[in-house]
Length: 329
Ligand SMILES: *[C@@H]1O[C@H](CO)[C@@H](O)[C@H](O)[C@H]1NC(C)=O
Ligand SMILES: *[C@@H]1O[C@H](CO)[C@@H](O)[C@H](O)[C@H]1NC(C)=O
Image (cartoon, rainbow, N blue to C red; front, side, top):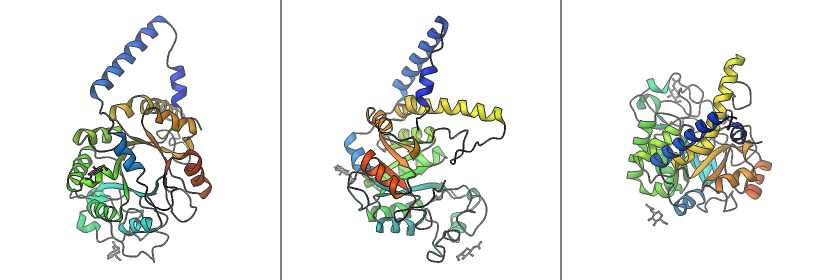
């Protein structure tokens, strides 16, 4: 599948001299803006150290295999037991979701509510850490019996476990740009080894920009799924109104163009985490020319894993280290 960015660039220049002037002015100001406010990429040698640590037994050594939410198919997502299972099953690294309890403690959780994964109910923003650690984080997992009583970990606990097991960490930050950047900055200060073994990723450019502002040494990535504003993960439209759908599709085009032409440079990212269907050899090349590595998500079948590992040779994020499974959106 092709990324929509190529399409927008071809229709970008409208006809007529006025349009030409406007286009030129806009392009020049955009370039100036990026040139002035951008963060430089961290040195390639350290990026390689983080993205290709030559660890784990599943990958061929070149390609890193990263357990999505710690490997949500094999164990309850975003828990210490998931991290241990991922390590045991040969993952190079884990992708972990950063959230906050009501009392501001950074913890691991994907959703904004605890309902989908635990035996509790309600929004995270209204639950303190002491309430959260009383919940069973394995309650809704397919292997809930095996992992019963597993707790929601703090970010600190999870990071210490990963460092102990020498796993690379892909921090996935959904929102709270200021809080997240502050919390991660502290964490890197406390555990400087993280500079060599972790990367901060987000769908939101603002989060990454904030992170680089608070600590420019941290390696970062933007996460992207083309058409994500107008369509859900399975391709269905998010909106029943055709007007709204068309409007969001237009915004999707702009967002996609911005990711591929402006935001990556502004944030000085080292990797681009993209939904797997949009990865092709040409696509990998596009980013390689910009000193950015592609990481594909979520790759869940052996056939696909072989393709990314042997043919494309790009790192991939998977829900399971042990068997084929459906994607967890
Ligand atoms: C959830 O499970 C834990 C562990 O079994 C238990 O201590 C707690 O009371 C349960 N909480 C709710 C809200 O059911
Ligand atoms: C990170 O890696 C570099 C290069 O291998 C090394 O010189 C440095 O000491 C490492 N830093 C930490 C904190 O492990």
